[in-house]
Length: 64
Image (spheres, rainbow, N blue to C red):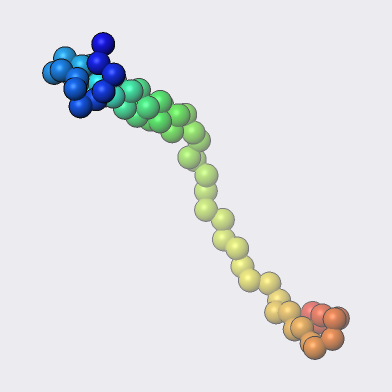
């Protein structure tokens, strides 16, 4: 067994690449499956501005 990445042979490097590729595909598949289960059928709602608020120098606010 090689304990150093630099002294590893070609087979060890190939195993590392294969494991990383399988893990990446698994994460991508999980992300895609989690996203497609969401409900995106929301409709847009219009938010209108309310009446303006005037704040004076005192601690009391006046709504007009």
